[in-house]
Image: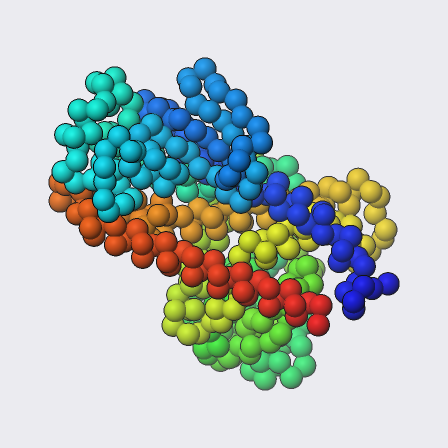
Length: 418
């Protein structure tokens, strides 16, 4: 059954998608802001507001140290407001006139004026009177908290459930594919790619994904003999694990499922593996963005909030896709698989949000850190007008990015229903 050509299931899954997205976003935002909050408290900085969401508060309470905790009406983010801030971007309080607006406060030359309207006790707990190293620690703590969350999730999964490992052995070769044309055969073991040692099939997948269509020199082991082949990945319309249409570079080979092993890790090993996974995601992100800048990847693949919501909903329902199982599973097993997918997605999204916030763009945490680095080297803050210009440029850049990725998301959704 369909409505206006759209399957009825698409309407039924919408509430689940929205609920999953909100839960995912609230968890990650809370962890990010709690990173700022906890380090600020540790350094003796007064926190006036801790808000999950923006706009009118739906629920609020005040803790023993005077911080007002809020859950607001628009749950698309959050913020921590320090004593002396005008707003969530840490702009100046009306206690001191500051024109133009900057991302740092007090403005250069306004420190003494501000100090006159604050008591010594207030200056002691004001974020903006803390030394530059302390302010930098508070700002960096948000993105770092996102990375810590991801490591904790991966480590917990590796300890509780283990991790599957695929040896780099070719199990199948797609006819007329790049691999078939290059002479790759089932049973070949991939030893290295462009001089990089390959020990797991996922490593080969990552290198092909980021190849940009460039020729790759692949060293293989075949019947005990070393063979070197040249293969050029092809751009293919494919599907991701949830069935969404995507374009990516492929060789046209599949792994040998007989070379699959499963391993559970102890606490220290799991943490080490989790840091390795964090490094892998960050490395893929940086390299992928580099490929976009160089024109070797399509920027249309960048996604925003709508895509995040789509993936959140699909991950929550993924365990109930019976095509994943050889035999019909029970409800609790399907629910367990869905939760694992959802939690894994939360880790990946947490890394992405942490990375995004570290970009050196004014209004983001990375922009603040850039200004603090200048202040630490030069011994004084960057000029107020330069800061103001950077703040406006940062707003434009961030707004442009959001518009672009939202447009991508809408086009991707329309392609699903077309």
